[in-house]
Image (cartoon, rainbow, N blue to C red; front, side, top):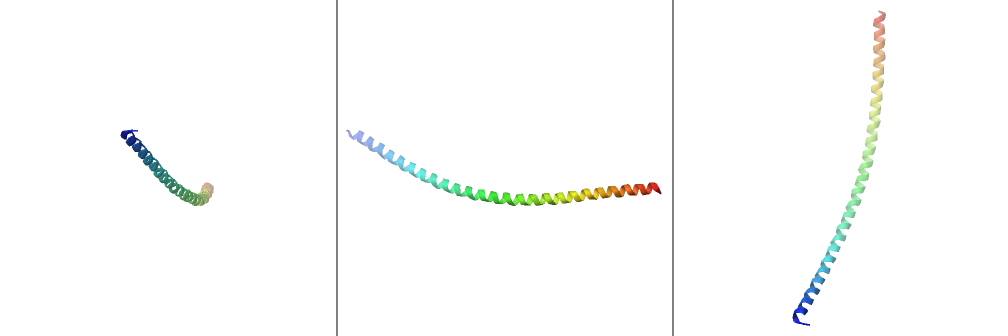
Length: 94
């Protein structure tokens, strides 16, 4: 083997070793990033579930209050209509 071939082989081996080291570093960084993201995903999912539960309860309470107010309004309007009709009848009779 000539000196040039030996140099070329050494360069190729060094580049291969550097490439393998870079690949390991990338893989390690990837694994760390994925673990961090998975942890953040779990926290976000828990926060979402908590907020969703609270919002659902609050929405149910608002719906109940609205239904009470709506029923009260309808009842008052019906009572007003009855009073108005009675007033009209009284006016016709006099």
